[in-house]
Length: 215
Image 1 (cartoon, rainbow, N blue to C red):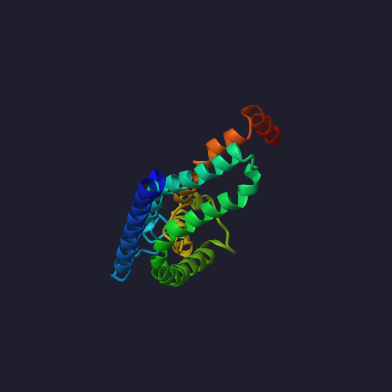
Image 2 (cartoon, rainbow, N blue to C red):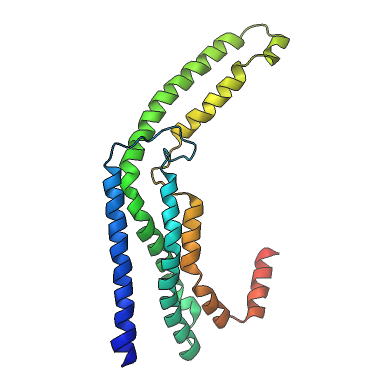
């Protein structure tokens, strides 16, 4: 009765509350994406200056861990009391991890069109300028006699510096999130299943298997 009348309703209310927060967050990002943002193709973060938004996915790792604890608890009961194999739940665990990645990263997809337009513009403009600079460098230094003055010329360092800037413009991510943010979110989703693994597999056996994979 306590589980049906107290625990489950409280859990549902908490989950619906977090779902509402995610809806508000998604709507806020969508409204921001419609503004006239100054997205820079050559920004060093690789997302036109918007990659800081990817840190939001790290905050959701706590929520993913909490939801994962619910699923991990149910799996632990099956493994401990019913003798079920943890390996039989592998698709559930992997599917939950993939679901968390898609669900919590997808709100950032509202910036994909703007970043795609920025990538096209940056590739076209910076690519044309890089091609011109490279052509002028070849005209000046190739197919001619060179001496020690080449060591004192600033043409090569300036060209390399500009090519680094142009490379940023040509390699923009269409989703403003870094791999580090995704890994933290994935770790939060998988963390609740680690105790279940320790319950299902004796630590000595687990150490032997890890040692066999490493050596």
